[in-house]
Amino acid sequence: MKTRLVRIGNSRGVRLPKPLIEQAGLTEEVEIEVHGNTIIIAARKSRRSGWAEAAQRLRTEDVDPVLNAPTPTRFDETEWQ
Image (tube, rainbow, N blue to C red):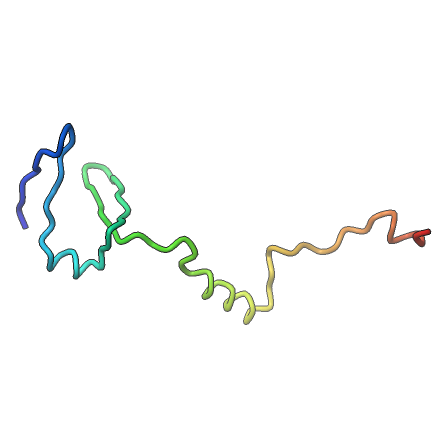
């Protein structure tokens, strides 16, 4: 699809047709990246996107990389008083 850049103050913008916005699942906030001479506009991911799946995967693999093995201290060797 061919379009033109429009002036918006000192900036420029692109008008996106409603069907493209709906097809891409875009909302009020989007992510914009530049790769070479290409600008990518993508739907903004929620901050915790994928956390539930990652936690489930760790549970099924019985691995918890966040928790390290306990490190013994001098308090483990002597009784507290």
